[in-house]
Each structure stands twice: as structure tokens, then as C-alpha cells.
Image (cartoon, rainbow, N blue to C red; front, side):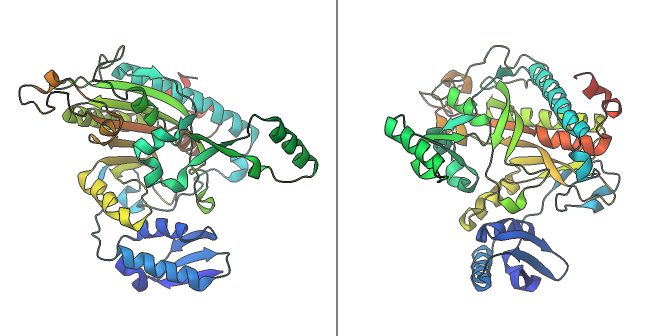
Length: 406
């Protein structure tokens, strides 16, 4: 069924983009949320329309009175200009038949490999130490990072069968009876990683600042008058339990992510974030891609976390590079995020600097203070999609910079 809600009834909620994202989590039976000039349209395949309407009213009330901060665009190279604006992510220029073809599937693999090679070479030039981490992450790491508290809806927990004969026999019996197996699973204490960077913090947990081999030696390293800037890079699969109705070509539950993490003094971290942003924007243009960079925030969905989202926008602690070709295209999705985390994560993982690195002011005190950190995350699958939408699936039509890394 369709639930139409006049915009004047939800106006008290403030930012409609944020409200529409939150509506999906009122019920797992909501399949789509859209809007026109007059109303929000909620597609709902459940049986209790009044309950959803009541939850929506309560959500709007909880958001009322909150400040609304605009997204600030830093860069924009779209031929259609800023008028193209934000839009619902779509399928872009290629049809579903083209994307499912044999040549498209092979092109995706080749583009992914080329992009990862390209990003690794650039990370090495910045002086980043190369890392490879497992796809699973202990619960303790996700708790220290705050991820489970902030985004519980996105986590995938790993279940396991007990190493006992009676369990193995029960599994075989259930298989023969076509009975479900999930009741035999027990928690393993492990989760599929939602991102790569928490592994870096866990690796450095309890350590004082220090540069890994090659760290800070590349041309991209900031000159530091405080704690040395240490950089790390890694690529791997990430997993997020996205709402089923939000899954599309640019929003997947499993995707590849390449991350560069930088740890050091507050100004050094911000300088590194800015350099990575400028260099990535240059690369984006060299690859013939159109889009823009704007302020952004993490997808906090609980109403009580709205102030945290506003703080991110106000402090400009998160920027996103979004692929959004001009003209009439409806494609609009983030391909890279540029984040500064303050000392929050270093404090959580006990990563500190040597007292001497803070000078005579003694900012850290006797035992050193938590360092600051930042992370630049490349959604490799989204870069692949953007390249395919722009240049097609034939290698001969891809930018020279990509073909050099095939």
C-alpha cells in the first residue's frame, strides 16, 4: 500500500533528507520512501498502516526543534552544474541487461584490480604502510570503536556450530528432514568487518606514537611540528546489513573498501585529510568523472543521535566525494569519504603520543595524550560503477591511467 503524508505534517522534523533515511527504520516492511512537491510517499507491504503513521508522527516530534544545517559544497565539476543537485541513487547510463552481461562482469573484475593497484601506489607515495587484515572483527573492537552502539542495524554477527558430536549429528538429522539449522548456531563473538580502519586502531592499541616503516616519508606526508604522522593503508571486503529496500547498484551489503588511516597531531591529521581530498579530486577529474565534494555526516538513525550528526556537519569532520554526472542523470552516490575523528578513536584504543612530542606546554602530561586520527575511505565498487557508467565496459574506452594498471 501507499501511505501519503503531506509535507506540512512532517515539516517540524526539519531536514527531509535525514527524515527519509530514518523512515526506513520504522518498519522492515517499508520498501521505498520518495517525495514530490506536496507529500512523502511511503511504500509499505505490512498490515498496520496506523502503527506506521503513529511511529512517523513520534519520529517527527522527536526531531522537531532541531537545527537544520545545510550541506556545503566544496567542489563541483558537473557539466549540469549544481542545479543537478542531490537525487535518489539510480542505475546510471547503463541498462540492467548491459550490467549483467558477461563482458560487464569481466570488466568489473579488471576495473577493481586496476583501481586497487592505482590506490596502493598512491598510498605508498604518501608513505603509508601496507596492511592486510582478516574479514572478521572481534566484538570487543566494535564496542571500543562505538560502531555497535551507533549503527547496530548494520552489523553482521558470525554464528558457529559447537565442536561436539551431538551437534554434528543433530545437523545431519535436520538436513535429512529439511529442518532449519539456525537454532543450533551459537554466537562466536566475531563480526564481519563493516570497515577496515578499526583493525589499524586495534593493532596500535596501547602504543605510543611512532612511524611504521616508510610512514610519513612520501611526498604526501605533512610536515609535522607535533607528533609524527603515521599512515597505514589496507583493502578488503566490508559487510553492512543495509535495509533490503535500500539495496541497489551503489548500495551493497558486501563491497570492497580501500582505506588510508593517518594518526598523529590534530593539525597534521587535518592537513593530511585536505591533501588526500585535493589529490583524489584531481584523480576524479583525470578519470573523466563528474560530481562534487560536500560536507556530510554518518547515518545516525536514532533520534537522540541527531545532535551528533549536526555536530559533524558543523565541524566539517566528514566530507564526501559524490559521483553525480550532470544533465538528467539521477545517479548520485558517494565514492570516497574524508574523515577526521579528533582524539575519539585514539582515546578509545589507548593510542598516545610521547610527552616530548607535545613540547614544553605539556599538553599530554606525564604519560602522553591521545593522538588524533583520520581516515579516507574509497568505495572501490562504487568507483568501478562510476567508471563503467561513464566509459562503458570495453577496456579500450577506459582512461589511460586505468589501462596502465591493468
